[in-house]
Length: 215
Length: 413
Image 1 (cartoon, rainbow over the protein chains, first blue to last red):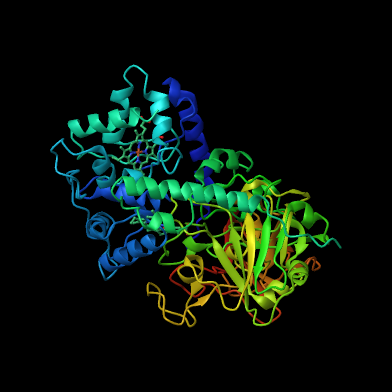
Image 2 (image 1 turned 90 degrees about the horizontal axis):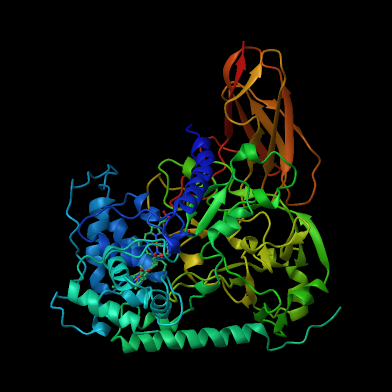
């Protein structure tokens, strides 16, 4: 019978070790107490949307350690919605496509090979990149409000806290814009902000300006 | 005994705050033209993640031998060889959250008793301390403890083969005393516990599980306020939690804020989607069948706490085998050890039975006849004649792993 002591025995020190390393090595002043960023999902069509909707209550490992058939991923996604995942009906199909493509197994239980070097294109129902849409529409379309509220921390920091912290800092607008587009963790905690590569520069500028106006 | 008077204390204030928060979210969503969250958010429980305790703070109170199985929700445990003590120290007790670790203000926390009762109660920590507080040593084990030993490995927290359990001392008040004070009405079938812990989104349902009336009235089922002689620590449910000893850990709800007496089992995702097993066995890999039932008491189980895996001994040296055995609702009759992969078995000596739901220590001095790598297997039998299997019945969510535990060691020539 396979025994699994070793796996349990090694992880904690490793995790704590890297946490301390991150604490010691962090050089940027605001990242001084930055925990280790969590791992993300593999890049591929639908990755951003899946990160946005699925890596909120639990880390990405809940997904990365699973290999499910298409119908199992569909069932799983429906269960997550029942548990409170903010997934709109039209988003179920692209999420299940992504999950089955990158974390799938065949009906006979054999693992599915992953497409090699898949482009990080987004299958999110992203708004057309016209640059002229108003901020409220953008926030709703990108699902930002699933994780951010005006005054209180939800998954990510409140918009007001972001404005207070970076609003008057030199280079603040650029760094916040980068965070919105590229995602990442460490400024506010260990939970990652998902990347939003489909947002164009004009949209980014108006989002950042709007966030900074919330002081 | 003091009859606590119902009072409008912390809970109502808390609810008021949450309502405001919800209203704000609802307004924000509406203003935003309806995000994916709109509609659902306002209807359900609020997120209170502002008052969450970071994992690093929780883990600072734990020994480094605890492996973290997931960060969000936080789960951690130490394998069998780190359990060679009679009472589990708080620093070694496993961690299993469903949501965030909440920071609860003990002076404002209240426990509401409601539902099919003659009198609704609102109890503070001080009220509980004026009741019959007593102490017992009792097992608590996550339903999924040992999950990764199943083949194929079911989804869910990857608990290692041993360790998702512990046997500390608990201080508290029998739930029966509280229920008698409230007066249970006719038609009561289940008792549900509600935790205050919340996840990062307002749409996340709170953690609620219910247990049958008979177990609720059994005197060992308690509302615990202390562990190992100290107040509960935040991650173990401060300031109060339910303790349903011998049953799967999820029956014991941390940070309990309400007890509801119900005419039927509670309906909710932690009852209907999790913590269920097939009524009759299914083939490994199959889906949950229609006859699924809720997990309740743990089947008979044991683990070897000494030696740890791959220990080395000298030829002629005694190998003092030691371990712990436990079972949910019966008692341990015997523990047998095998040094030849289960062909022959030797009876280990079993310490006297302590508290009703505490594990029992077993031991045997083994004098190896040969040198080289060898193994020891432990197998417990309960008073109902149930024996630990080599391979427990596979089930889709990976609960109740109680396979025979096996440890390898080397005797140097």
